[in-house]
Length: 338
Ligand code: PLP
Ligand code: COI
Image (cartoon, rainbow, N blue to C red; front, side, top):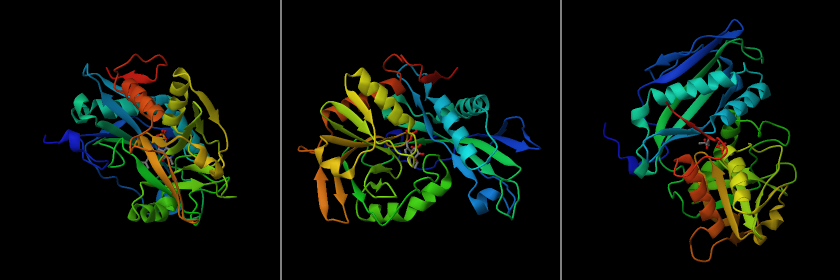
């Protein structure tokens, strides 16, 4: 195997195996192991026509001790349950989800990047409606699968400052839509704005709430946080994805003696932040150096020296230390693979 671990980007690489489980006749079957990267589904499958599709994203890390750690897998299992309920799909029991994830990682241990590389194994659970329907209805059959792929940083900059763009023309999710669950349609809805932002040199779009364009929602692939007055502040909103990374950072911020606030954040408040970041499994923490409000030709800067701020740095190192097993795991967030 000839993988340049330290220079991996966030892209797909084939691994040895994936695991699959089919829901038919009202019940889940046995977990199956496959070495194919193809799936064979009915052309009238609801996933293809009506977007009955949800996914998850989590990571496994190889520690200095060579052990493989999976971060907060139970949280992803619960979020997939919530996505299934949201778009009327068969529910993957938490135990099945966790078993499938562990198995997929276990069967592909040789693809978990070495500790020194800073890369990790991205785990992608996927749930799709496979049963045929022409009328708009939930499918009767589903496929749950988990594949893995070794990845480097989501934003090519890694832990460096990037800029994000506010473009009020585009919404990611409706106020009471599906923004709070992890369904493919949200990402399709964000593609045009996301690509436009990339073309202009931004790492992501910073979405404001769709109803009033008054409050900060989140970035395309990650949650938003701001730091000021020794406080970690992150949006409360019905239309953002409840990020497991963000939830972890709230805890770590408290442990570090910061105050934490989860509340609506008016966009007008951005100029008061000392530090700003995006956070998520793929993005980890991506410090934001500048927010450009493209509609009003205004820029907000969050760094004087071109470096991430001290609180962001501290949070980043603390989170990484837990994920890679450099530090003890007081909250039981990590599952060590046998
Ligand atoms: N927000 C969106 C829209 C995402 O796609 C993700 C990625 O999963 C996140 C936030 C971060 O969530 P998490 O930290 O659970 O990966
Ligand atoms: C993740 O962070 O795991 C995600 O699913 C974000 C995705 C857009 C790559």
